View 1 (cartoon, rainbow, N blue to C red):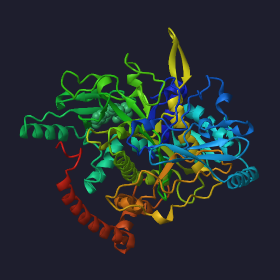
View 2: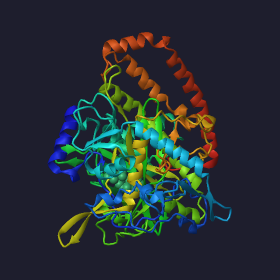
View 3: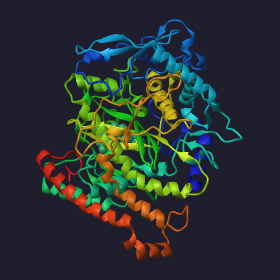
View 4: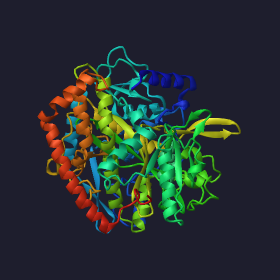
Length: 634
Ligand code: ADP
């Protein structure tokens, strides 16, 4: 990776200020003042009754303070007061155990679902809960607080501060002379240079890997090896290099069947917030040049039949934590956001191709439409929680367990596609043996549901917006940042629980033994956690984690896809010079001379043979069931 590149980015950002965070920094989606209600994890909405959206612990009070009055929101020290208050309210209501804490007594009232959908209150053993909490407090007292360097957090800062306060950790807003446990970067791994210990919230190379061209390349490699497994990514051509291929293929399709009139979406590489995106129906409409320079980007099959709600197109923003690359550990946030278009959807026609409010779901675009709805509720308006949308679908009889299971599979497969190159980047920046930090990263997956409910990957953001306030015109020409409860609800939960998982004082959570390795290929991943991740909260005041481990938990179903990663591991092994990214002639000769001696490679070849057999049986299966988007067009 080019250090120069990153430096330029950082310099640019300094000169533009926070709002100019670019290069994979997705600064969209601030939703204005809505009053939060109890959130529902996608783990829960199993009922088909729409009324189940009003949960027993529904909060009607406003949890957000006005800007500048931060203290009011940090109400996690509830135990010192004397009334019944939902611990979820104070902690962003992202706890999915429906518990009420009776303050001052240590009693927990748990709610349990009855067959009729109502909840009954059960008084759990006071002594056990009390003992657990007392022990927790003692333990927490003994340990020094975890230290977090927030000096480079940029637009995540507000949500990060709230999270650190809730965890009672120690923030270093200006950095620290001695090492911190965690460094929170707003843009890239290189925001702070020379970190030799601790953990950084960015992987080297992630920005590069997730740019539109590189993501398309990585997924395509996997599509070539496992076409049926990777049919969730629309067919894409890389510009300018595949322009000829694109035009030839489209003309061939049209010649074959004159009634076929596909639409394509053109996206600039490294663009975000819908910038520079347009739709075309003919290759000749491609704008290939900017001045004398060829435009870099992708042209992609446009999904013409998305699932609509209220006749509007919408997409899903899902937060995914890569906790570690080696061993690979992936977590998915149970709550996410959905972003709605603001013009009624129609299938693309020459007439409506330029209607961005109809075809593009970006918040940053739609907020400028007169139809944008700043809602008071999480289940209406132009930005809603994912759980509210899933509930709505469940009420209509949609099998949302299946949808959720497909989404998890999409996420795991996408991560598996980018991991091989990430590992090469990683060893170049943090070569084995050299002191350095370990890394983790929150990614933003943008997912579209097709009319047939199949999830389609649109893109992955290496820097999803973690802003919890949005700009609003409070008087003509006067703009102010105002709190956005929907964003706070979701994003603080994601950051706080990421920190909890990365807590250096905690021993690694073990993969549940009875399910280690997970489910067989094709088996549905359960929505409801039988073994929900423990809260990892010594004080007992935090809700259970909103992040759910999906890998290695379900590794059995996906491990066979990790072939390219094994090749990357061999590549890294033969690089010769640690921290290098190129295989020189000597290293290559060594590789060729010794390859036959490597048991790993032999295993790889036998795996490939097995896979081609498995692929054959998949193809036979799909021939019966029909396969979705990719390859359907061409
Ligand atoms: P950006 O990074 O600029 O937001 P995206 O790839 O997310 O670029 O695309 C912007 C929007 O365009 C998406 O939010 C979605 O609404 C729409 N979109 C993108 N790709 C497709 C596609 N292949 N089919 C249909 N709609 C798409």
